[in-house]
Image (cartoon, rainbow, N blue to C red):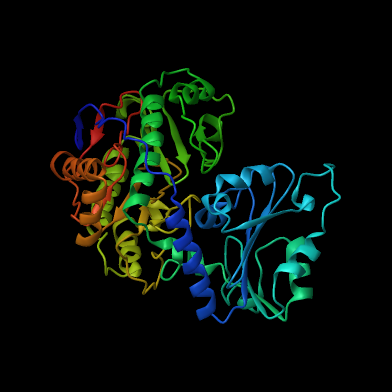
Length: 456
């Protein structure tokens, strides 16, 4: 078949467990936040977290709230973590808490409704720990002047926290960008140890997706398909999606009992913290199984996408302006046919989408240490979609040398994946791009026969 070869999907073994977050790493992160806050003229920083928005808090502490909310108060000389009834014992998972470098306090108002209260009020805890000057609030997003009248004071935290902060302090500013901005955010660059953790997460998600795809059968329910993935125990970064049949156009749909019907489009993902592996194609064994109007799906839709993803890889080098990647995708995959609306690539962390240097007019250069998600999502009413969504890290010679020294097996697997992209699939993968998943480079357009994979 034009544009495909027949191969087994590569499997490079299960990585060793990555290193846990070390006390020294977290202490350095907390110190970096204090320095960034001082440079911004802040007297203290308040970091909010909940189950959906745990990434910033976890990056700073190694603790993520479960069931409840949590609040970290950071001054130049102190750090206090407020937690509810069920999370308070779990705060000990933080090396900083265990070492006494972050104090904890019980605030039952952060607990679930109807649970016992009776502890100090949140407002009193805040007033007792924070100065009255200028406070920075970190939630999970910041805003631009096209969205709100005053971006600096538009807070992205719940009113039950924002209101007492505003009553207590002279001024409260949204400083979420200190952690998440693609250009200067402290979380926007990773080191060798983080690459090892990201690779492990990508392996776990990719291996589960591979098991799921190779178990696809016509007539199978989406529940049975996801069950075949045997998803491991890593925390999910987002809900497992599975869109086919009557829900094919609802990309964020989870399993609902739909059956895999011959000639239907399909998309699905498995996402762990630090990894989102997603694919899309058709429940088919070849073009003959498609509706007649989509018979040229491979040539008209998938092959241009594949070439664009090769060009995307080629541009993943330090110094390339984000707008250049955006403009290349607009040329290669015009919106009239491919319908791409979101950024063609973004930063990934514990949150599936942190932020992105790639957008229209962006002067932000790609940089070494950026953990990039190849997340380019086409959609068409006739052709459905195609997808090759995996994780990568942009790495200059210094970062590659650090990875090879500290985690030689991780570095070797990344290099083997890069060779596979270049030599088997034909993609333009520069030495600055580290593929993190064994699925990198794999597009199987006919998902009842996944051994047929696209080549450039």
